[in-house]
Image 1 (cartoon, rainbow, N blue to C red):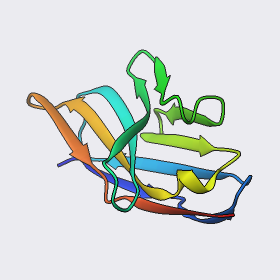
Image 2: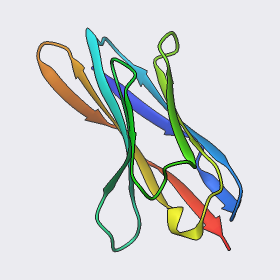
Image 3: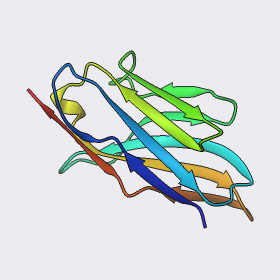
Image 4: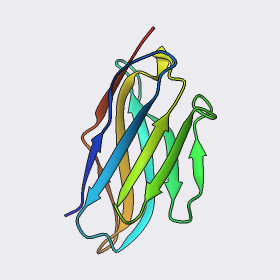
Length: 118
């Protein structure tokens, strides 16, 4: 069974940086994509960034130029480097993995909170 564990969240001042990690464990026949989502209190979960098997990346307009998604295949880990953080970036960040096991499957991590003080 594939599991995801996020880490790296915490409290940072506005303008600061954090790097989130999403580590996968278990058997993955084929990686399809990893997506980082975030959800602030009282708001809907939104897609922040994604990276595909072909290393194509996409970002929400609100984070373009500030956030960078990357992956380390050997470590089965995807990172979200977040720079120039703003108070509106505060949320619980979740990673989502799409992969091929017996069929196409998706799995979510437990989330890691990010707090940005102004």
